[in-house]
Amino acid sequence: MQFDIITTTTQLHDFIATLDNSPISLDTEFVRTRTYFANLGLLQVSQNGKITLIDPIAVGDLTSFWQAIDNKMIILHAGSEDLEIIREHKGDLNFTLFDTQIACSFANLGASLGYANMVETLQGVIVDKGESRTDWCARPLSDKQINYAAADVLHLQPCLEKLQQQLENKNMTHFFAQECADILAQKMEKQDPDNAYKSLNNLFKLERKGLAVIKALAKWRLLTAQERNLAVNFVVKADHLWLLAYYLPTSLEDLRRLNLLPNEIRIHGQQILNIINQVVNQDESSYPPLVTRLVDFPTYKSTLKSMREKIKHCAEENDLPVELIASKRFINEYLSWLWKLDDAQKQQADKPKLLTGWRFDLIGHQFEH
Image (cartoon, rainbow, N blue to C red; front, side, top):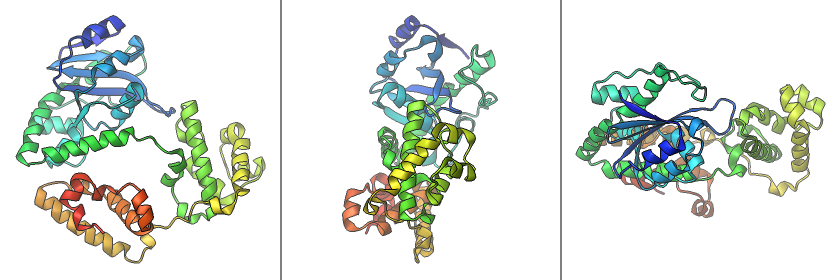
């Protein structure tokens, strides 16, 4: 396997001059253990069968490359984290995405097929995944690491060509393109810090005051994590946020009794207490509404079962994985929208996935209310 390695700005500019409008296969190797933002360790690129590895640590500024992929077709496999890295570095996602994992799903080769399994299925080639757990920011990289990284883009273009044909044969090309465009749009949506608390567990066990506290603490934790480039759980653990909201401590000694970590208390203890005190003294009318669980709605189990049966039938009719059409998360998102919001709130809220795009055309119209 032949490939070039770029370690200077001059080499990067010379490489960019060779790019044309044909699809670009892309992969990233990164490290994210304690940081909020991923540290890019290596960028693998392939176009027209020519593989190039770009060393972002040696080169530094990759702005010219990110600009060069504007309006191109970018081939990724399971590209969720790659897209986040590209967005952070590029500032936008101004290109057409072809995610081969999603294409495999539409081709019914597997709902979440890994790269090695895809290559073996479509190309009959065994890919070595031995270097998947490595520190890609350490230097020098070994020959084995570099060869492993290059192999991650070697097969994307040939797989794309086979998948395009399969999608065309199934009349799924348009649905697939919609899904990839939706993913790009979703990745460009900025997270609202005020909603950070909604992904935490056991919110239904909190009174409105506790919900107001956990909302404020989750917002502070997210903004602190972003500002200090720390993984959110290295600011304060999620379970500890819940304890703080439930017990409403008023002193550092209270924090110790709740078994918060020494670093959480030492670095953030006073700030946490200030936030709690501020929220507790707010007008109660500003507190969020109580959280109700879907499972507590009397018809939840029967409705879930009925919807799953319809979705399963639809999947069989269209030769698609059930998980692609509607995971349990998508069903719950729809039921939350249907049951928890009044008509005015429904107008304000984003429509659930089941009622938009290709999913609505395929099955969602059967659930519309």
